Figure 1 (cartoon, rainbow, N blue to C red):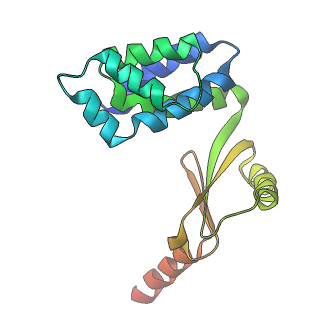
Figure 2 (tube, rainbow, N blue to C red):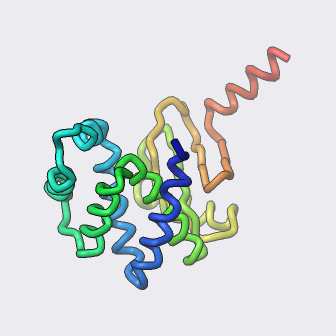
Length: 176
């Protein structure tokens, strides 16, 4: 079976072109769709041979918190009819990458041992934008195993100032 990234690329590119100037709206409903499609129970339901494509589409539309535009409904039907429901999270990720590339920004995931308030995230965002030299869309992921500090992932770049990383460095230094 082909890799999900290879399967997802044409869908993400086609959706990007079809979205035109409504990229933010498309990204919003596509992210919601990706979260729904990532559910293992939904995928198990969709893979059942007695379940029709329309039943899967209706279930996804029923779970959605918002009403989707026609483009979204057509996209969902196309993905389901082609048997690509499992690729939806990767399609959303590639769509976001295309959107970010056009806007000159990147997604940044900040791992923190503790929840961060809005003011701390805003301050951190401005510091990280200077450090990485581009506009960042910052999201925070609470990871208690970091013990303290933060771990920032921007594309393939990682900035790890967590206590866990420092302890690992000390362990390597002491065992060498």
